[in-house]
Length: 306
Image (cartoon, rainbow, N blue to C red; front, side, top):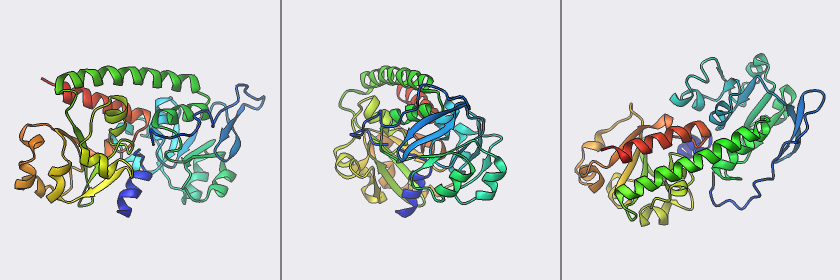
């Protein structure tokens, strides 16, 4: 279980609570650029002076796809982001770093560092460059992109993307419901480290799009066991109880897939009806803007194919 949490918190993605009651305007950047080319961003820990136009950003967890979507250069990123096929082009020249590789970070000469609130060595990182952290789930997944936009002095661009995404997701969702039926259920399953998991509505893997943006339904069993915590560990024997009419199956192509040949799996109605849509796991973890666009295109293609 600890491995799953690590796999979600470091890359995500995950993944951000849609039911957050936090004020989405809590973190803001000042409107006026100061004479020395900086702005003041009101972070969770207080005001931080950051570059008005950062050119060498390091992302230590989760937010690489948001930064890339806003066209800002990343010189260093965490291993999870570097392994994500969606980020391959944008991170082609980025170096792998972590919150403990301080010497390497110094060599990269960043002008801004971004990470989760759980990263280590924040004080030391602040000595290298302004360091801003975000608490996972403090704001919802779309507001998070706007917060990154504020930090990078690109709030207008981030807001425009969010508005466009919401419109596109709603339109695709309506088409999907029209095709599969209003009452059809969808479950999101992942095969990670020899364990199966089912996900709620805010833990990445496309769950935010399916359940929040599109309003598709999850099986009652998933709602009961995975909605609150975000995910729930399954055995193969009980997988049929959590399988929806449609299954999004996030898989590692190199993992053991012997269970796919079991009678238990083959007799799941979604499997028999060819309603299982497999996706490469590494490209589906997160819920940043780049990944959300990829997930939305994936759902449109798979659900609406002839």
